[in-house]
Length: 377
Image (tube, rainbow, N blue to C red; front, top):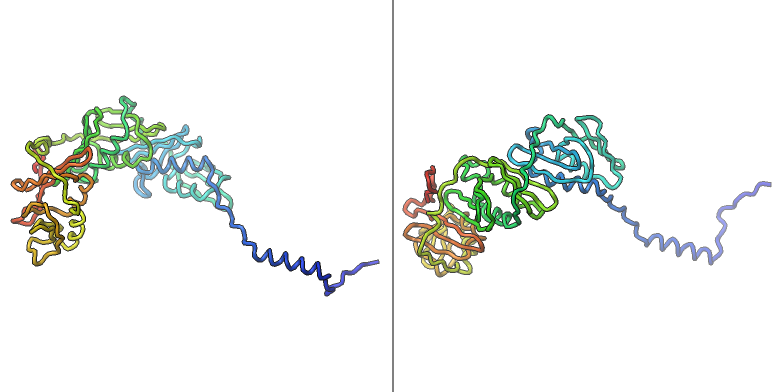
């Protein structure tokens, strides 16, 4: 006998009510979100390492600038001026394109698979995602050894770099303008208009460090612990064994002590709203200068044509480039305005400096063109 199921047969009332309740609950119940793929510890270690060395890399450029070397649980990158290295968990041996490898790993979760298809290609797979990252051979990269540690240092060096680097300019034709002088006790930088010196208090040999290298050390999110030096290069070591090695400029730094070691200074706190006043009027200046006139800071010498901000306590008849004042704001807590020599000496926490004023007769800022034995402020 064949049994056939009937359709359209009404459900008993209690069953129908129970089914309706379940359907209502199902409709109200929110759909669970798909969990975001968690990055594996190995991938996270690689990403962190690659990002750390990426300060010496570019997305496009020479082979040295684009590709890093990974071997023996280390990742190292060198662009010819700065070399950066740190430990990683993966025992991969390859020289991948740094930024493409970071991009690929960032899209993967726990169960990623890294396969070296050839010397020139890495395959990165996760779930439905697959990326092919270009590689080069180790013989195509120059990865020199870091300088061995010879002295202990700490994050006071970072603070010094961070404070004075604002005056150096990457790529400046003059090495003095493109670098920071790191020496026993202090770090110094100048742009020809201003000079900054920060006291770190650590005994080190004098060296001229490219700005890019100093900034990389200052921004590294790891505590400094050691220092190495060869004369042509210096290496900064961090607490986890990572390092940043930099080439050094061979030029001689000018004698600056006579410029900044001036007797008879009487610095006093800047007016409370000094920098607020500078920021308020600088956009109205035609030449980038601001002037001290009639108890105010103004955008022009002729007050009737100027934007002004009332402020007392400043010497009459002086002017400065607004961008230099705002750049030096972190170091200008107290100041001594030397009107006779058209300059201001200033002081902050562990830092001091000097800034040349504007020649009011010509309305041009001081602009040195060459160096002798001293920085010609």
